[in-house]
Image (cartoon, rainbow, N blue to C red; front, side, top):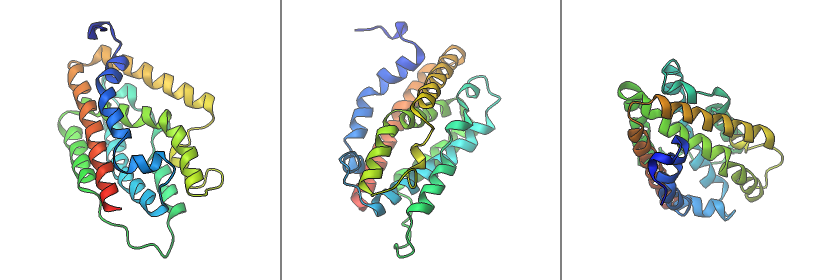
Length: 215
């Protein structure tokens, strides 16, 4: 067994969240999505809820960009709010039923992000880690799956996953991991960031299960 002290900060985050990450991939709407069986309305619901999370996270990150701990992971080229808005506009049909309210897990997640923004901004790093590295890795697979499942052409409806070509995706992931190394060297309580990342995966699992139940 590898001692925690021998791991880099990105490795600590990955090791600590590995089991919860696997549970998230096997939960709720993610099962349908990964099997390529998701329907457009269910996917719209997922995007709406994710949009609410990014719309809370990204302004909070920008507000703390001057922080020695938060600053390294503030990479606007990774921000997804605008891409999600464009996908929602592309995929929405005039005949669709009114958009449902956000899931309770989303409301609780957004409330947590606002709390961290006001009181413990360094823990926002955990949520940036969970979202952006996932978008840069597994998200690239999801782009293909969603496009096939919904019969989409080109980038239409999948801009959420579009960071550029594979070389750019790899470069962004390397930059983000290097930023996490800086965080680990500067953070006064790295353990709290790791614990928040574990909690963030749990929040995603709750959201995905609630979306599946609603569908």
